[in-house]
Each structure stands twice: as C-alpha cells, then as structure tokens.
Length: 459
Image 1 (cartoon, helix red, strand yellow):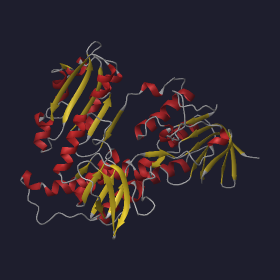
Image 2 (tube, one colour; image 1 turned 120 degrees about the vertical axis):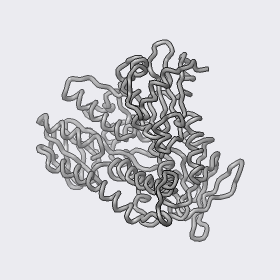
Image 3 (cartoon, one colour; image 1 turned 45 degrees about the horizontal axis):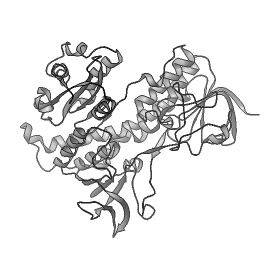
Image 4 (cartoon, one colour; image 1 turned 30 degrees about the vertical axis):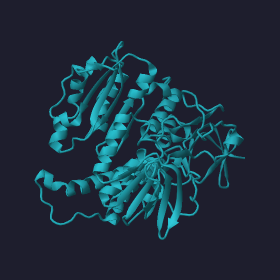
C-alpha cells in the first residue's frame, strides 16, 4: 500500500517550498520530493551565482577604469577565479541550505530525496517508496538545451552549470547564443580578462527585443572588446589541437572562431521527460512544457504544474507568482490567474535592461494608436555623474486610453527604475499618474516623468 498524503510537491525550485509552507500551515500533510539541489535553478546555477559573478566583474571593470574617476590603482588588475568561485559558492550555499533546512524542519512536511516518477494519476514512486496523494504539484524546473549540432559529441563544452565551476580563467571563451544567458556570461568573462566571442545565428543580439535595444547592447559589448558574430548559420564544433573550433557559415566572414572553451547558451528545456507523465495522463506541448490553464491546472484533475516546467515564464519571479496563484485559488478563495500578470524581466548586463509589457515592434504590429517617449542616458544626470551613461529609456503609451503599454530602460539602475512604470500599469492608471509625480533628485527614476511629459505620436 502506498503512503498517503494530502499533497505531493515535486521539485524544490522557487514555487515549491513556499507552496509547502502554505499547505502545511493550512493543516495539509505534504510530501516534498527533490532529486538533486534544493533551491532550484535560481539558487544553484541561475540568478544567485550569476549575479554574484556579475558583481565581481563589475568591481574588476571599475578598478580598470578607476583613473577616469580620479582614482589611482597601482599595477594591473587581475581576477582570482578561485576567490570569485568561493565567494559565489558561499552565497549560493547559504540560500540552498536555508531552503533545505526550512523544508526539513517544516511541520507536516516529509522530505524525500530521490527521483519522482508517476505510476498513475495519483501515485508516484521515489526509490522503493510508493506515495499517493489527492493533489500533485509539479515544480521540476528546466535545464540548458544541448542542440544536436554537428560535432557536439566530439568536443568538450560548457553550459551555465559547469561554467560556474571553473577555477581558472578561459583564455578565449566562445559563446554559442547571443541572448540573455550568453550576454550575461560574455560580459562577465570579458571583464574577468578572457577574450570573448559571441556567435549568434540571428541577424541581431536578443532578437526578441526591439532593434534599438539590440543595437545599443552590441555597441556596448564591442566597446568592451567582445567580438560579435551575427547571421551565423550552420554552426558546427570540432577540435582544433587542444582548442575548440566553432565553425559558421556567415556572409561576411565564414572563418571559424577558435576558443579554449565553448559555452552553449541556446535556450532551455523543461525537466519533464523523465517523470512518467504519460502514466499520469498529463499532456505536454511539442517542446515538452506541461500544458496548464489560466490557474495552472493540467488536463488531469488534481495535478498542477508550476514554475519553469509549464512554459509560462521561466523566471524566478514568475515561478514565485505561480505559487501565489495556486495558493490563492486553493486556500484563499481568491481567483488569481496567470493572465493577470504583466510581462516583466531584466537582462543583468552592465548597464542592465529592465523590460515590461509590449515591445515597440509588438505595439506597431497590434495597430494601436500609440505615443512614444525616449531619452538617452547621456541626458540622465545620475548616469552621467556615475560615469555610466550608456543606453536609453523608451516608454510606449496607448494614445486613446492613456495606459502605459510597455517600456525598455537600458541603463544604470534600469532594472529597478522600470518598476515605477510597472506599478502604474498594475493600477490601470493613466500615464499622467507618474508623469505628475515628484521623484527624488538625482536618480534615474526622476527622468521617467520627463520622458512621459515629452510623448510623441508613434509614426
């Protein structure tokens, strides 16, 4: 006979532990299953370690440019990768251990270490244990995609996971993929002292963003000495002595990029292929993401999918919001939905990009009559004073409703400043609400009302 629980949660990413906390507080008996590292992607090989390394890279960059601030730094600036890794590990281990300790000490929660596989719609097996429950919450996360490109099985390559374990600096890091993960690591390792080449098959970097954002980031990266190769079709890998050759078929330059290390940063796939979902009858899409409705229920009654595995966000903040949606519906009689949330995310290069709502391209495609306001960071006093004036602000507004449609802030503190606009969007207030507000000087946020006061019809 299986051991029965009120609820079983699979995976200790951002949504699972908090949901366990709410369910147990409500008197539910919960089984929690984790097969590897508590804390999920964010804590172990995502936000926490990468942003710790971004911070180290920022300090290295500032040290090298100290003279521009009137500060003398004696000798060449060098980076101790072992020390960088040790700092990063200390930060992530504190978070990981905190999550694990919380779960193991949680009343009414039994933690199982192992790989959960469904045997039916109401049972899972973990090792020799068979468990059953009235409700299941799948929070299995995702992993780096490894495409079947020519030569992939002939060369050593890195993903975002094992790259974080390096204790020596790559001489030349070639990154396949010019989107969010590739860009963050590219700038990090360039500032650490590596030669860096980014190979992207699309016509521009982060092609989901507007063209002006892509162009500005390319300019920023090239100014730091990062080589960008676009339109890179037919990407293939091969050994070149002790190095690795990344071959491409580019119109401008078809030569291979030869590096000491290669990072694959070409997207992520959900961890749903080895959970026995077919035995439970849970449906997935062609990419492997679990299909869910607006309240994160799967097609099987009593089974929910939360976090990266459902394809509804793939961010820490959306995963946590998934927990909030499920808990609100189950425990609070509060009918929250995925469609209530506004798209928002950041690209944590330096300067960062804060993005909310619709892009300019999406607004144009929608046919809405819109207003647009822009301002270069060279006209933002705080950015100039900090010596960090790359980038720009852009805000899009519906000309008829006066509602903010979206914004991009690429610039120092852009990832923070963008929340001023986001909160107004959630309040369903007109843009004049923030345009007429008085912000602190000197800050980046104080220029948002200025941008909104200079809106022009989008042509």
